[in-house]
Length: 50
Image 1 (cartoon, one colour):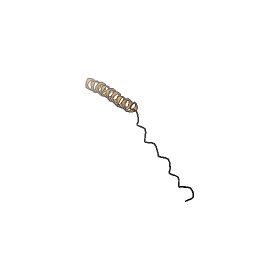
Image 2 (cartoon, helix red, strand yellow):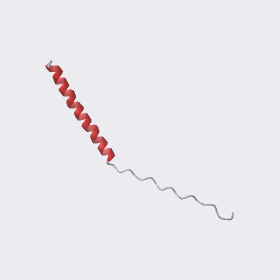
Image 3 (cartoon, helix red, strand yellow):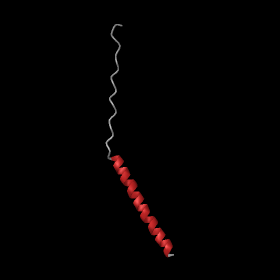
Image 4 (cartoon, one colour):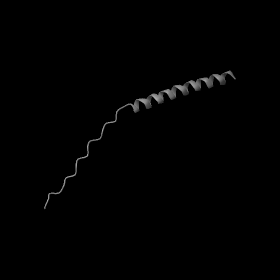
């Protein structure tokens, strides 16, 4: 009985620590600025009368 309760508490503590770590990793990834892609060059038009 007591061993089961201790195991339950330990599992709960590890679960809380795991969720906090994953949340921190998600927050760190979400706050990194995303680099802008290079601009697309304008299409070259055909010469007139050619």
